Length: 78
Image (cartoon, rainbow, N blue to C red; front, side):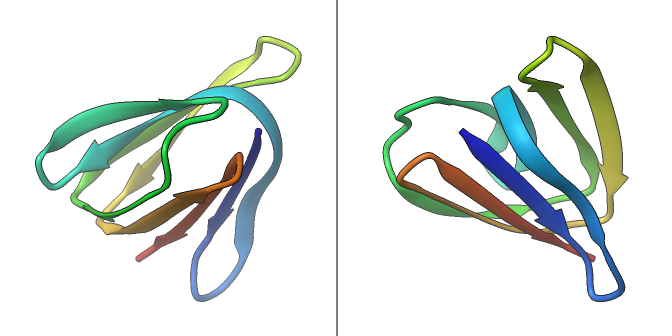
């Protein structure tokens, strides 16, 4: 699945990932391939993802929104 993480200044990450864990307003949640479509508010925390090669990375965020649809996870952070 494709993960795109953008801020108002830059594209922080865009690429294929195995999974991504996000700090949702109702609690942390993980998105895997073929996840149901959703839109969620993000709170302060860390976005954790594992890329297609198995490398893990974290990006700290103050909040934002995420849209999951057709194996594309679009995250807009602030």
